Image (cartoon, rainbow, N blue to C red):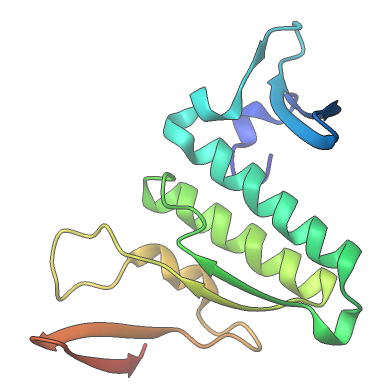
Length: 149
């Protein structure tokens, strides 16, 4: 509910089942009225991205001791559009990393219209301890430039 506060009474449901000798996982969202849906059908995929991040972080914590928790994420919230939702997701992600002792490298592609503009939602991470934001720009064919923001 940190990313979607208007849905804070919804429940994220994970059901495990045996299938051909392996364990499958079915994901769902249930509203207080009992309506159920798959996260893929919610908010253009943003709910799915958020649920997937939570499952990845949970799995890492269950499998790795604190000093070796490292997570590499390539556009973990790619279906989450709008600066305010991205701010909430980035804040939730940062808080999760701090609370669970996770170091991370996260790739975020801006959907800002101008090539010269940096995604404004990244300002939520500005000045946070342990955070470094870099912008990678293509400056020529097969050549890029890395700038600390």
